[in-house]
Length: 325
Length: 284
Image (cartoon, helix red, strand yellow):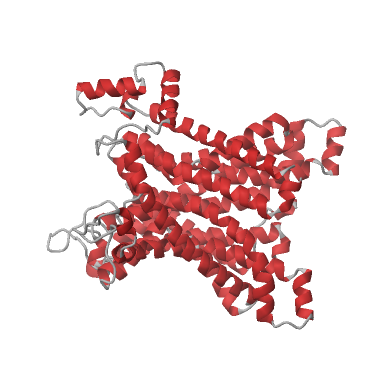
């Protein structure tokens, strides 16, 4: 199979999954208890507003027509009107997306840098006490509830020592002219330290364990033995030869990790009052702001699906057997 | 391979994991005898004031009391029940559905396989925790929401692995022989395929227990849990909402998290033991 065919097939598959998830989302919110109108119309809207929304989403039409109208609106980026904010859901969700993405990527980069180094180290120290203690310890960090770790860090470093702020993205009253000014401000990064630490401690286990087992595989390959026979130092063998080859599959897992992390962000964003998609989803669901809940869910799902695609393509690119089949 | 549905007693970590499980099973079964108070009862001090935020040891409360005057130790003990109940049922559902899907897809192949595997693709596209939140909000609050959500979404991992295992089994000589001698598909699956994929189902089941407990904790923490059942996640939510962090009430929010870590990592340790039975290559 040609590379183009593989990419085409993957894109088609992704489009199918996206459509399926959108469909599930549509029916989930239509079949919920209460009036089907509740998904789009707040009882507090004025009769004119209600009538306008009825027409916009075709809520007086049969379900299949509503579904088509919903798809059509979605194509045009129309996700409805938030009950709480009285503003288009799409606007609100897009405004929160950067906060979530910055948090996710920063924490994963920290987690991967640490995980790759520590994983290589543990593979090198195979059979030693360091490894015998290290591996169960890493498994234990995977077993932590992320929000509990966040609570602990908050109690110790924010409320206890007073080193870090307790939540949000900026000090009360601080204003920034542009989003860019906010994201590049020291305050923003200061506020992000504890959430990043929380997510990073939880996420480092995956790259660490992957790196370790890849390293152990690679170290048994002929070219590593060759390098040893040539008399290269252990350090040189580990870094120059084994680590480079073990690294590629770990990098592929980064995309998958982004997808997983963005779902888990829901709790950590809530603990740290981080204004991202996850916290917004929780708030929207508990205040019955259904259009906003659908929008936030859809946005998170899109990131997950895109990251699955990226992982598939990376995997195909790195492993020639997939394209050569 | 059939003999590998045994406990992984060769691996010290797995033995520790099994020990932890026995400890929690004991705690869950004998909760009414171990707990010192009714976990929901609002308690009063000897001076008839609300027993709020008492530190451990005060007036005989082993781990102190919550802001609403409830005994923390008793909540911890009863929490083991919800954790085990949710963990084991959810893991059973995930392993069962995943195994059935995987075996059917792998054994029959063709359009059945295509349909089931595209369904798995879709399940991989659903963000799990957000899905549980929305489901929990629409259904009546209940501890079973987590189990339902896991059964609907998380069979995907088990399903894919069991499918590829079934694919290799399908072409084995003894399966061919059974087919030629006229055995029905059902008989071949039950006699030759299922017993051989069972260890894999166990492996994924033991990982799913941890996932279920963590998910329940997250959902309860976010306020979508069952208000009538005491779980460790609920305790953490209670502590968080009652400003336990700023009050420095570590005795309140550290123990539930610690027990979650203990029971979830026990599942990981046991699953590693199974992995070494299943894939001896790793055992080096």
